[in-house]
Amino acid sequence: MSVIVRDDGFHPDDWHGAVEEVAADAPEARLTSLAASDALLRVHFAAFSDGRGFTLARRLRALGFGGRLRAAGPLLPDHYAMARRSGFDEVEIPPEIAARLPVQHWLARANWRENDYQRRLRG
Image 1: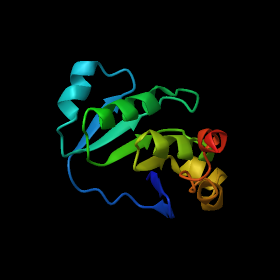
Image 2 (image 1 turned 45 degrees about the horizontal axis):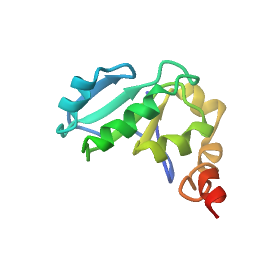
Image 3 (image 1 turned 60 degrees about the horizontal axis):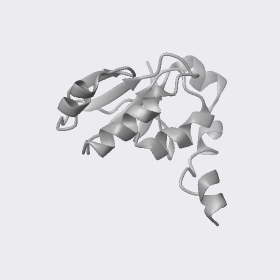
Image 4 (image 1 turned 90 degrees about the horizontal axis):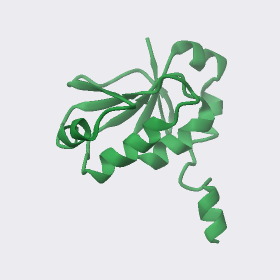
């Protein structure tokens, strides 16, 4: 069972509605059609080194998607702030990652609004 990470720590999956799986290479027409969806959009990250999902999340939000957006895959705590800044509401990780990198590691990245190098550069 996957673990859901939010700003306040680990959670079980509490979504009971429709889920739309979105590939990181989804075409623009698919994104446009999903922008009006009320389903949870689950963007799959194939590897922790694949950042296309962050761009996709930003694009979905720019198209007007206002629902729940979840990043899913082998992400690491260092990805959490980027995921939140790009528009994701939460991150879904495999239990092996949650066991190897417990909640304290994720909570250390939960200040994603404050810990932003661009903000520091702007002063």
